Image 1 (cartoon, rainbow, N blue to C red):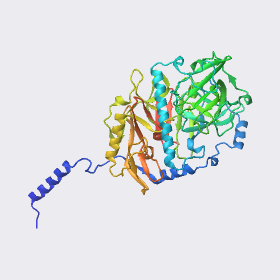
Image 2 (image 1 turned 30 degrees about the horizontal axis):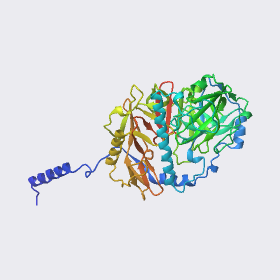
Image 3 (image 1 turned 135 degrees about the horizontal axis):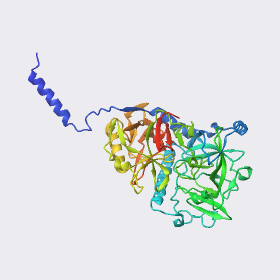
Image 4 (image 1 turned 120 degrees about the vertical axis):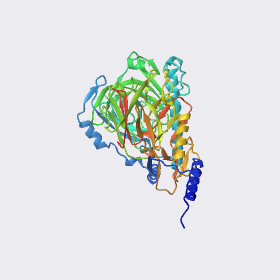
Length: 500
């Protein structure tokens, strides 16, 4: 029997009205831009990192070290420009045996360390913005107490203990050491004999008397006056750096030769020779300051560019840290900005985010630095989880939740308020999260850079967090697998995927 045209019209119109009146949460959302999260792969790495034996990682055995010492190297002064230099880069967990019983406890420790890092970066910035000078800092109790040496009581200039390490040679002949990579710090330092108090490191402690190029800096040296915290004893320049987790280093400020594998060596690099060092540095001999200040390694070697690619923190793989190398051609380029009050941090011209291919309605002012130096967003190698001002974070989180209705919620975990139960799944398709930069440029993140496991059973969390501070931070979880290239000569930063 033929259907009445009027009846067909009524049914169609009724269906349209019903669909239109459905609440947004009940209607099927079509997401145009998605990416696949490898759930099984992430959980496998989480399992492996707990049982990983660092003894299986031999980045430079004795034979290789001997060969390096026999190879001719380019010897350059820090006052001259250098050619391309390359170093290997390793994640923190690849250098020592984990003491954690399971992956969940490891993640909690990482996040607690990360919170200390973020607090310290904010305090460092506030010191600069408020014009706090060295004379205003309170003394810190240490076994070495040289006259006039001072630092905040609460180690407010803290920069954390580091998440990625590189291996450099120090002295002549060069001895190889693991050093923390830190773009949020300027002062280079390593533990030195004789030790008043040294923590355990994976390599023998550096012996200055065994090097022919070790030189003590005097109190009137310009490098000494450039230190935030310094003192003078017997015309020797002394330094101290404090960190937010309670770690600190104290000792002589000197110059020494630093070598970069077989790609070259730099003479007269200023660094701290620490005799009293305490805290959670874990395996590393010291720290390479890669910030934008005058005492940082890039500044001292007059590097025109700096780049690194951070491998997954649960991986035993390594990548490279490079100076004066060209950025990959497919890099998404953004403006590299400077804070006139603090030259250390690398600010980037971020304008917003998109989720599932849809730009979010977030005021760009939430990512901009004002004339006084407040606000803005920095790229940091030592912070793990990206921090956003609360209004920006809420908009990002809510958009992701709205476009991922099929994911099973799993409550909260530590600083994460949005987690999902992905147990039993091999992979899932999720909305793509992208950074939006000045000029309309977009950089999409892999799913594993914003949905990370927090246990071995399949709980994954949305890896962003809110902050009450005006300063936002792009952390290393969001940078994993990306070649981040700082064009220091032209004030640009590039992001290129899959370049580790």
